[in-house]
Amino acid sequence: MHYEKYDAFTGKIRGEKVRQLKAAFAKQRNFFSEINKSSQDSVRTSFVISEMIAKSRPFTEGLFVKECLVKASEILCPDRKKVFEGISLSATTVACRITDRADNVQKQLIQMAKDFEAFSIALDESTDVSDATQCAVLIRGVDCNLNITEELLDLMSLKGTRTGRDIFQGLEECIQKAALPWNQLASLATDGAPSMCSENFGVVELLKTKLNCLNIPGINQYTLHFASRSPV
View (cartoon, rainbow, N blue to C red):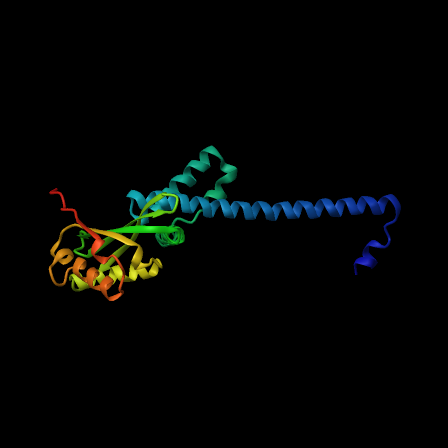
């Protein structure tokens, strides 16, 4: 088909036709490249705005932010209005963006934890406005170059009972998920609640039992700190 269509062109006419075809192809390629770049920019913008919303606003405000952006584009850059309309900021999308970023941060932390020579854990149990109990698990690790990393390792939701055993089981899952070796645990800090430091079934005692069962040398050298919660 192509042979029959273009065989009639010869000499300068053939060269001009080739030039036209190349120009048309380049224009088409640039068109799709611009669409792809615009799509990538829209997704990136969605991630950035979602992160800002997560810090202090309800997820549902994403649609209001988008409406503001579209209205502003109508005045400042009408030719770019469709780009702003393509930014996805629904409540579901914002929630997914925040989850993706959180997962990415956790993966980076787990990767960094592989280089820890020792680490400490801090636990802080609290109840939110919906009476749901949560326990923040914070980690401080140090590598062979004495670089210190401090991050939120996990936020455990405690459903049903809130005993020391429940919290400790959640802590075990966090440690295993992050692939942290128990023999590198240097200390544990708690808020001093009964579920943390109960003599028989508190997190501290359960941790001692766990480490003893693992025959980790130097178990008696573990420092167990208790930080009392300051009155509000």
